[in-house]
Image (cartoon, rainbow, N blue to C red; front, side, top):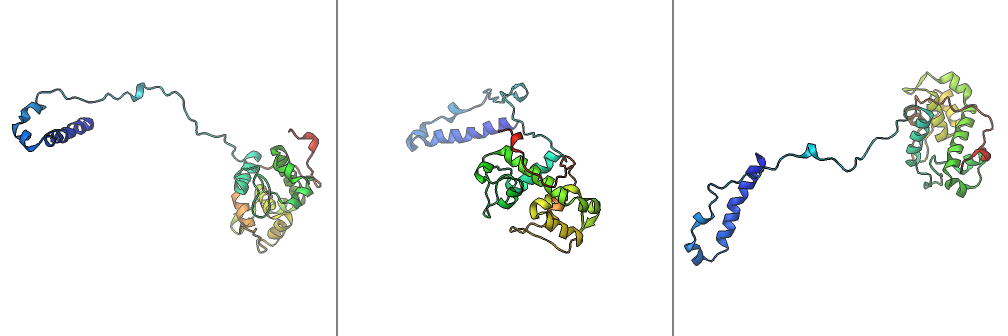
Amino acid sequence: MRKKIAKFSILPLAAGSIFFSFSTKDAAKLDLEDYSTYDLELDYTVPDLRDEIIPEFEISHTSPYLGKSYVGFKEALAFKESRGDYKSINEYGYLGKYQFGKGTLKLVGIYDTVGFLNSPALQEAAFYANASRNKWILQRDIKRFVGKTINGVEITESGILAAAHLAGPGSVKKYLRSWGAQAFSDAFGTTIKTYMKRFGGYDTSFVKTEKNARVDFDKLSV
């Protein structure tokens, strides 16, 4: 019905344009009955064929559901750090997908920062090694504080490991053992509490405790 009304509404305008396209003298001679639409079949309704059209392709907006797994944990953390960009270098010199400092990289056996930036496999291995080392340092605090609430946030293992990635295990120890009194924030103002809350509840049992965790270059897939 709307399509019919739209079509008919054009007709008076069309007729008007015809009328004014002639001179005043010619207009006097015109018989407007010659332009009448009376008794004409003017059904311009277009049938709805949307259900009969087969699209040539479909775009899927779905993505793998990582949930609360270890992979979900590290990818969520990476998105917060760099939006998952392996080539990222921030204004303070932190590198890669997980924004490592050069000092932390040395702790897990990486000295070539250029090679580090160009190797996603090396960055993933560095993340695991650092998390494994932090878990060893914080293992007593994990046993003591997981399940407790500090500053309104429930403490979980994944929250502790995320906070250690942000601030280092020493700062996390101070935060936990002071029951949140000794706070920490990085150069951007991000706090331990923020990471404890944002990355809490993931399953990080995949990460094993290792005192001197290092990247095993022999096992890297290049």
